[in-house]
Image (cartoon, rainbow, N blue to C red; front, side, top):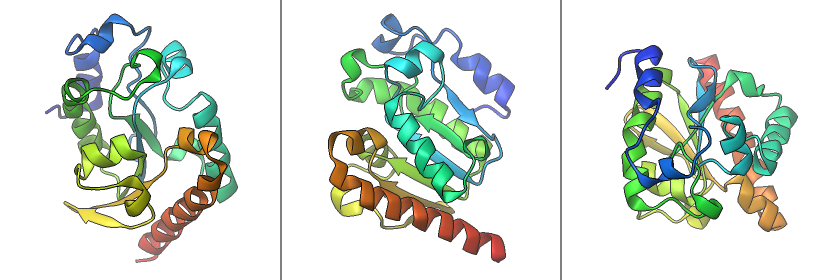
Length: 187
């Protein structure tokens, strides 16, 4: 594990731990406040993210930005990362070996950020962080505490683009995150 951001960032440069490096344009490490109380973890970069090297800038990211703005949360005040740091071909789900290759980077990001709340965006993030026994449809909206961090599983914004009916639950989940955070700030 790395003790600071400089070491961690340097460690991922030129990463070749899995085959995703063969297709990437950019490593999409993470973005936001490195001391954020709220962290979002998604699945992996898409085409726009790979192009820009920034997480959640495509259509799903725009939807996330809209939701954050509506809640009065500035994107710059949260930290956003993904399970894998390179785009899987054709935006397929990351494979097990690819996710395992990146998990130490993500663990280190969590250790350095020290968030109070982590929002798990979608099944891939949920299963990698809390375990494969969870189903996103059943787990979303339910707080889980683990090792001093509270987690809110919810749908990935890309799922909302495919199924409009999930937007209401996604919105409820993010409102619960904001409410929980405000309660924590009062204590």
